[in-house]
Length: 305
Image (cartoon, rainbow, N blue to C red; front, side, top):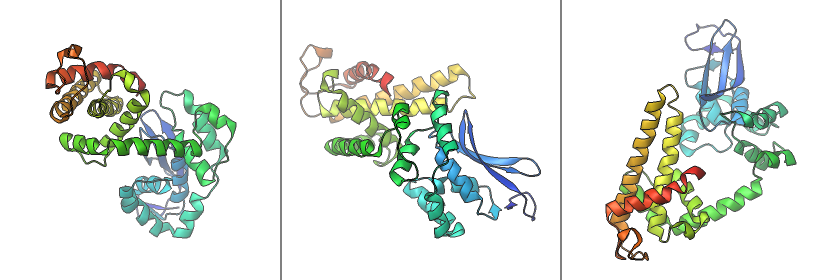
C-alpha cells in the first residue's frame, strides 16, 4: 500500500513487477484501480537490478515520478558515482541501511536467472554480466550452465580488467589528448567506448595496420564513435529506416573526420610506413591521407564491435 503521486491522498495497492520489452527493460508498478508506471533502459538490460528494485519499492509508502528510477539505481550492484549521490543515498535514507543491506544480500530467484538465460535467443537479450556480479557477491552459485551461456566467471573478469588497465595506462597521454581534441571529458561514456575499442584493437595485433600508437588511438576513436552511433540508431526505432541509416552514416563520418584531424595534427613521431603506402612520407599524415587510412582500417574492425 502506497500513496501515489497524482492518484489522490489515500494509499492504494501497488504491485511491483519486472518487465522486459523490446525497447525497455526495467521495473514497473501496477495500480489496483488500473494503470501504473514503468521505468527502464534499452541497454543494459539488467533483470537482477530490476528484481531488486521491486524489493525496494515494497518498503516505500510514497511513490513519486522519480521513485522507480531511484529504486533501480539503488538496486544496482555497482552504480555510478553520480547515481550514488543522486539516487542511492537518498533511497537508503528512506528505507534504512539494514533494509538495504538485506535486499542486496538476498539470493537471486531462479525465476530471474531463467529469464536471463532463456532470453538469450531474443532480439533484445537480457544482459549476462549481472550474473557475474552476483556470483562475485555470493547471491548466485556458479554453475556450468552459466559458462555455456557465455557468462564470464568473476576471476576471468578480474584478469581481463587488469589487462585492460595495463593497456589503457600505456595510451593514457594520447587518450587524454584525443578527448581534449573532440571536446569531451576524459572520464565519460564516450571515452569508455573508445577505451573498449582500443583494447580490442591492441589485442588484435599490429599486423592489422596499427603500427604506431597514434594510429591505434585514432582508429579506436572511430570505432568507439561507431559503437555509440550504433546504439543511438538502435534507440531510434520509431523513425524511418532511411532516417536511422542516415543518422548512422552522419555520425560515422563525423567520427572519421575528428579522428583524422587529430591524427594529422598529433602524429609528430615519424610513421614507419613505406613511401608508397597511401603515398605518405615518413614525417606524418595529411588530413586526407589520415582519413583514407582510418577508413580502410576501420572496415576490418567494425564487424567486431
